[in-house]
Amino acid sequence: MARPITLITGASRGIGAATARLLARQGHDLALNYRHDGAAAEVLAEELRSLGARALCVAADVGEPAQVEVLFARIDAELGRLSGLVNNAGVVAPAAPVAEMAPERIERVLRINVLGSFLCAQQAVRRMSRARGGAGGAIVNVSSRAAQLGAPGVYVDYAASKGAIDSFTLGLAKEVIGEGIRVNGVRPGIIATDIHASGGMAGAPLAAALAAVPSGRIGKPEEVAEAIAWLLSPAASYTVGAMLDVAGGR
Ligand code: NAP
Image 1 (cartoon, rainbow, N blue to C red):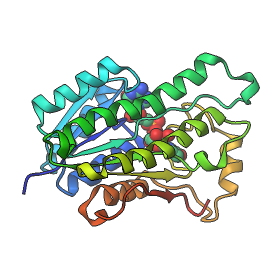
Image 2 (spheres, rainbow, N blue to C red):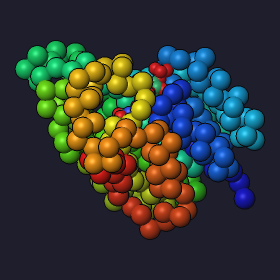
Image 3 (cartoon, rainbow, N blue to C red):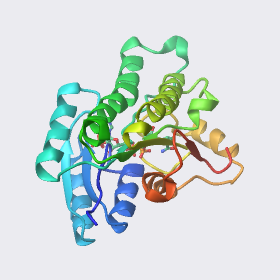
């Protein structure tokens, strides 16, 4: 059996890196996309190679159409026919009420989180679709519990971007299942990654949000990776357009 070839966007750290490690152990070859931290991506790639996977690191801002085209062209040339996509790259901005959000901030969050996921899914569908000569595949979009909680006073722009991802997942899933492509999503809760320090919910807002987690603890990136890997796998063959909450009951 050919090894699956899977692209993970935003794979240099956090949930993306944990997913790469798990998929490599499950027999995938991997394209690791990142934006800035090429050194971290290369260290991860070496680790995956030691597990027997092929690993290709590609810098690209997923919110820039020309860079996304180059990302997929490199996968075509250096890895082969894509069979899986994890739309994981995402950003938050520092906590702020909606009334104080600069237009540039809102545009950036929507461009990376929403446009980026659309652009990568477009390229993936063109390669996977049986109607276009492909061999089928699976896409997992990484949303957030914030999509349904709204994140008031903290990052409503981010929550709205993830709400868009939920609708996108449902619509695309129905659009392409007849072409052999399964599309699903995960909604992580509060997960221990650097995203909190890089913006949004550091400090007091994070502590307050954690107090409302029924499981009583923060989640691990590896726990989200398990859900993503299952949705990508043939074990999820009849799961289409689903959103799986990985949020400790929040
Ligand atoms: P993270 O630790 O901040 O990592 C983000 C990754 O995305 C990094 O590899 C970063 O690469 C990459 N990235 C950022 N902007 C990019 C761009 N424009 N193009 C390509 N790559 C880009 O984040 P995380 O917590 O693992 O989050 C991963 C996903 O889970 C995101 O979609 C996030 O919204 C979602 N999520 C996270 C949580 C949580 O609590 N952690 C909860 C719900 C949902 P560089 O470092 O190279 O820039």
